[in-house]
Image (tube, rainbow, N blue to C red):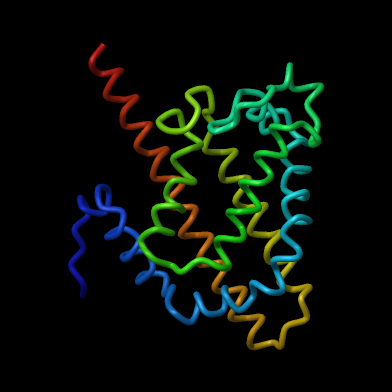
Length: 202
């Protein structure tokens, strides 16, 4: 039985990621399967990105988060939720971020730099990083991750891979997205704890 420093899990990103990958069984074979899918998945990234944004724009609870200025974007901002379309300059900016994220998953080495990047994905959707006006509720992040996971699975199933390779690829992405989901949820736990501390101080 391994001894796990549970306090360190909350304060040391590398330690946390190492624990999660070991627990889930995410290893070199998974990374190889993900990288091997890159030539087939890369051409489909724009279609996947469009599908994600079509879903996000179909609910006011998710679309409203694209009205405030996004971190790193200096162009014009939309006047309101009703007139906001996917052709807006800021949405194209956001789509570019999502496309690069998906490309990073299938091309980048799974080193400390990528782990930090995956962790940042969770952090920038809270007020603690990125835009102070951007505060996406956890329920919406979980809904998005569920949709992305299903869309990726559907895409992989449509590639016509040999059965063994298809199974390895599906399992690899399933583990990867659970890792990503944890690195999203942990920042919401931090925000909640900070909020409780402020409430107690009052």
